[in-house]
Image (cartoon, helix red, strand yellow):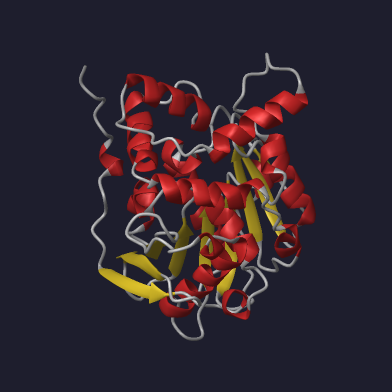
Length: 326
């Protein structure tokens, strides 16, 4: 059986620059710069088991107006695989983001920083670091959560009513060291159920599966241990930059309950955008909406202009899918 064709917006964008950035513990991070040199900077942090390729559909939509930076989280893509488990931690995530921002944000400027899933957790983990605070104009948190990830998972079907059994099964799924193997009809369908909304075109599910299956098994398992006990609520509370939250209504990995909790805890919430019918991989399912939200935040809180606040005529109250937050 032939594999579904990959949509054209998943074609890897050609970076204008590639960098190696060393984090605080010496881990080498692969960084790509796309778009317009000298334009306002947007920094993208991907999630668990993904890579810079995950952001391709969003980068294509932002590159004409922004200097778009994407980096591979440690162990993912072309970044270095940490030599020991101790180098997998929320602290390391925050240090990695700090190192990337220090390298790519021009002196005296700030960037809009967007993170999906573990990328959003990365932003929360590094929120209080001076390197992050000084270089962040605004934040977009997409399909993410600050804690209780196993408790709130919705991957196991609702027919399993016991909360204890559901938690046990979710932990087993999260901790699995089984190789995912080649992408085939069965694995594609299973992954699509877990991470994407119903009715997503087969080509987009195929693209997501190829990205996730490329993650090394050991890296996936080591980060799973971190995610199982993750708690970055303290960082969320200290996130001072204006912050928008986005979630799909059918997100089984970080369901909307997390989004509501984050908005309630934020110092400067800029609205909650709920995408009907969308699963966990919102930037792959609805890249136009994610790019538009990043653009909205960049317009309201211009990168490179610290403490600027520009009125946004397209306010949250005009969008029926968005919850405005005072």
